[in-house]
Length: 281
Image 1 (tube, rainbow, N blue to C red):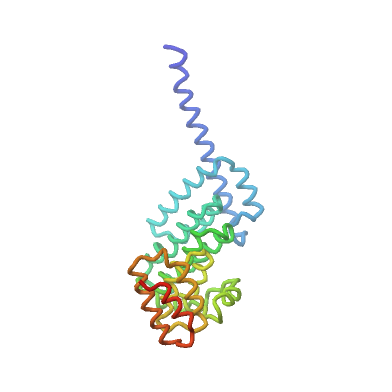
Image 2: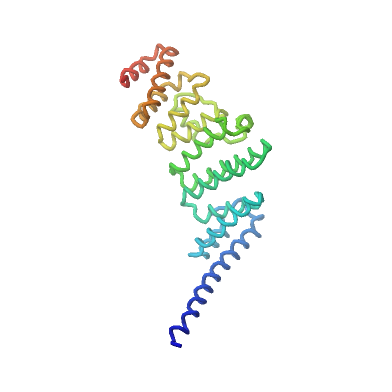
């Protein structure tokens, strides 16, 4: 028996011991946070205790994240949703610079977990939690196109759309959500006062903040079910110009049709006719 053969199992055991100690430390740290959570208003990187804890975790933060991902999935399978919320809070706090982490977990709350409930009010509670998580993510990464577009999609698809059987309930309770901080600045840009209890308006706001013209244009089209207000026509024309090259032929045909309708509704606006001439095939 050689010295190397004697040391090999010791090396393996030492490596396993190090991993075990790090993992145990991460779990102890998370347990410490959970036992103190009742005293914290929210879980956030600006909480002094949490900031100290995250620094102390150092390189083991990645291990704790893996444990949390596994535990969240496990609790979700067991329908133990109340226990899942603080773990989700900690998970996004461990990696606040990752838009994908915020986006996935917000989606999980607003779509997957809300779908597991049958009562409309309970579904809405989880949708609101998903929106609130996205808002937190946007405070950490305010220019993230991923988060801005996902917020817009929540309002366009989950609330304005018809795929969710409780969507009408969500629309009826949309006033429970605060109006965005920059609402007045957006109204000035859009050309007039807007109804913030209309989900398409909220989707429009977030897509515009993401500077993504095709999404913004699609939302404007969604608004046209009740007729596009004249104040929004210049905004519609500018958005259509910005998005035009990214539209597929079918979409371009649809926009031409809408413009002809607007031409009939607002014959005193020559800019509609001008734009139609520009994009005539």
